[in-house]
Length: 126
Image 1: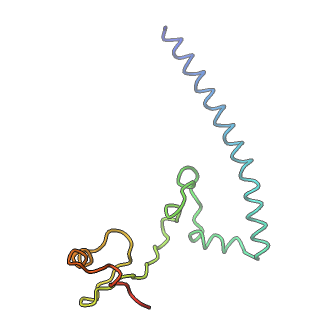
Image 2: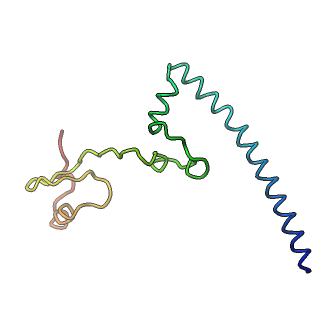
Image 3: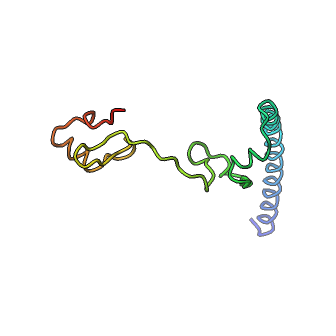
């Protein structure tokens, strides 16, 4: 193929990409309108001000558009939000060391289990 043909084909593809991107933006706007209406209705129902929402969202920080906005779960938390501490679930009776039960078991618990102790014997009773 000649160089002009490649350039013309590339221009045609880029034009199609732009057209599809505009269609995607229109669809996204249509999908967002009812969600925004629902949020506003809930805010009115519960007497929530925009300032309260801004404060809860992260001290007025505006959300970034794009992929970061579509995250779910813990990753959706604003970057400046503090992680909550998890209450300890297990305690070593002699040393007082604790473990929340999340993640890899600490060395003291692994050693006790290897020695034949049951994990349940280290549960913190409230």
